[in-house]
Length: 253
Image (cartoon, rainbow, N blue to C red; front, side):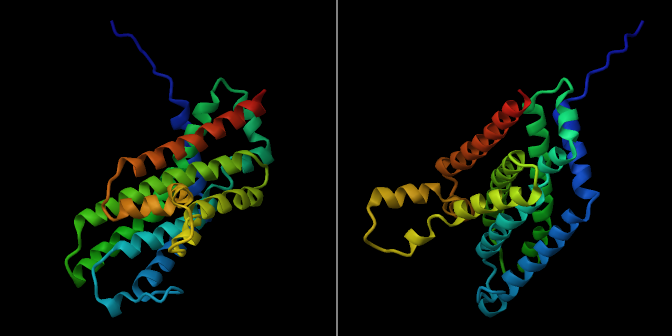
């Protein structure tokens, strides 16, 4: 005699699937993917806006590829995530969702995971660039692996920032204007200090360097796997994830 046992579906995975469907049934994700690969190709191979020309240097060095992609993701991930919570708040569907026996952690996990996967999909066409670059010379496989590890960590961090920004407003544009400056500041906060060789106290220089996402990403993308860089991304991602959960818990009361 067999017993039919049905395992209930994981709410976070259900929400992830629903969110992924909403991303890829709208044209926004495809537009972002297309613009990203176009701008990245033009920037890496022809130095669009940056004066770097791959064909002039004739080098198979891929450091600039990951740097350029990180800069583009600083803009594109906030665009992708701006509707995550805001659209549902505006339409009232989030209130219906929160009346179900589901925790805020499951909701935030599902939405954050979907945003993270979508951001990875946006960056995924870049794998063709190292393949094409290999025809110009020997590429460093370790550099490629560490570069993509850095992009994965960056996508996770910026996705949680975008989801958090969307959770505090009903308006997508407001969400964009919250998450874009946060991501932008994290990426560029150390640049003014990097341009000043002397005159800044060491502890101030070290503090802003520690805060800089660009500095940690740059170290990882060069193949320098320091636990401090990994912990930076893990802790900051966990911080914004927790902040989003707390925000939803307060709104549910």
